[in-house]
Image (cartoon, rainbow over all chains, first blue to last red):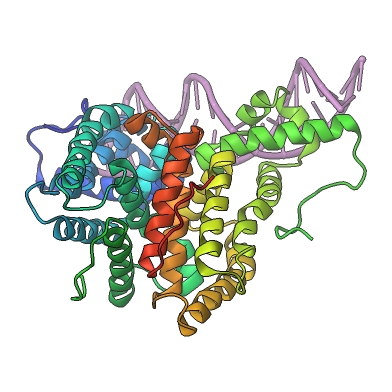
Length: 220
Length: 220
DNA sequence: GTCTATATGAAGATAGAC
DNA sequence: GTCTATCTTCATATAGAC
């Protein structure tokens, strides 16, 4: 079941309906991620989706409905990497894999990252319940995984919450601040070498921060 | 001279003018930082500043004028910490001090941090020239400082750009994602112990990432 | 399913009284 | 300096023809 409830999504959709809904969600993600809920307009979204405003409103009854649909659409992708962190795995390997996954998502879906960032900077008015009922349990569970690694002497003591926050911070920064990074370096995560360097740097800082030494091979 | 040009600021201001301009800029920072340029309204800004819409427009001729004034007002605070990074100082000490300063700014002016974040996520349409003509020279200069530390063997090799980006990412994250952090932990940088723990964690990751060991004393 | 037309309201900005 | 009134534009949403 979707984490964002009350989203209108009919059971049976024709090909053209599927396609138009997809076009709208894609355009809406782009607009909402840049301008936030208030700043985005269905006029611009509809134009970007190649249709009229009234046609968009045939598919989604209102602006909030479009926004909720976009959120529901990208939420799983947002939560999945953390879910895969395995308590029984090797800490260095698990954290490296987690960081690589987050960097992959940041590179492939920077707009989704920015949409959540925008929403959270507004005080998360439309996703607060998701934060409290979906993200928090997951966050608590994975914090405990890290705490267990500490208690069993596998890694040095660190506040699990801050470890997770700093990983989120570094991996999402490259998506959220893409335009600044591009202005300063001419590169983005889209460039393979740049992404690889960024990923290695983050992995090195995280692993050494907990007393582990990163493996030499280059991460993807 | 201000980095953001073309900002109307009369030379002689009465006490009431000073006070009202300050009230407006304060309210505007709050609104723009949450909703971005498009999403914020001068109606809400004026109400938050305790005056009518038309009165606000007596002080600032337009919405863009208010926005530019806010940017100009917070820009120095934004750039100052990086400026103080001293090439001749001890790397561990300089970087620790830099991180502590950034965390201090994040704690004391989270809205300013979010305003810039918002602007940059939109592609920096109104600060691109600042990024290119003010931030980039500074960024290049401080990247060279780090490179010199590497070349003289004071720290381990690291890409200076990624070192700076990850520091920015971690320190700004606590301001920009305050609502999420609050929802997950119940704390923010406003709480002294929380800020101290966050700062220590960041310093440890950064210093160890470049082969240095952080000092034991607790950072502010 | 898609269009034009339109109702309704919100938002930026100006004019002019006080 | 501050207010009310107003103009204009833009945005959400609906109605109804095709």
